[in-house]
Image 1: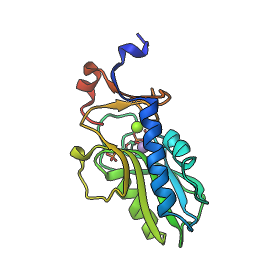
Image 2: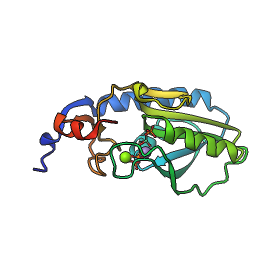
Image 3: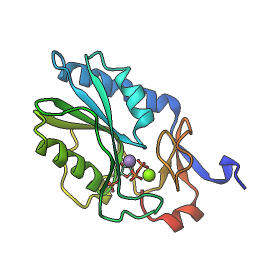
Image 4: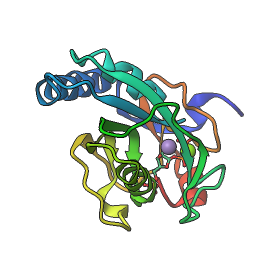
Length: 186
Ligand code: PRP
Ligand code: MN
Ligand code: MG
């Protein structure tokens, strides 16, 4: 049945844990982007909650835009091909761009975005990622800022989905084993 307790094995990060990570990253970014006017680029859809919380911990004159990229769609394994679903509105030429992501798994999505924005002439392209699933990396991509590493477990909530659902959980939880068996990835 649809009760969330039948879906989640245990909480990995509580609302307080997530808030603390946002505060810490926000402070660091405030220092590093002082005097700049960065363009913060959220990767739809997973990054929406992290982006809104993170920018409110940043005392920086920033703009926000969104890119919708997908390598998974509703499937559980990365297809290995990243698709640009919808583009930025903002011209990134000469801008200091900060990509915000919920999770980096194989790294394919992040690498695609970084390469695209550099190619378009951004002055700098860095990223701030909430969860870094290092053990799954397939491409070499630098992660300048991240909240925490995670093991190879399927995590949901706070933007992270399973088949499109559970993004709206306030915490981040690990999917129960029966789902993880099906999933075998992020
Ligand atoms: C997920 C996640 C990252 C990406 C990480 O997005 O939000 O963007 O996959 O995987 P990778 O490092 O292997 O590329 P997804 O494609 O599921 O789209 P969504 O954000 O809309 O859920
Ligand atoms: Mn995503
Ligand atoms: Mg997804």
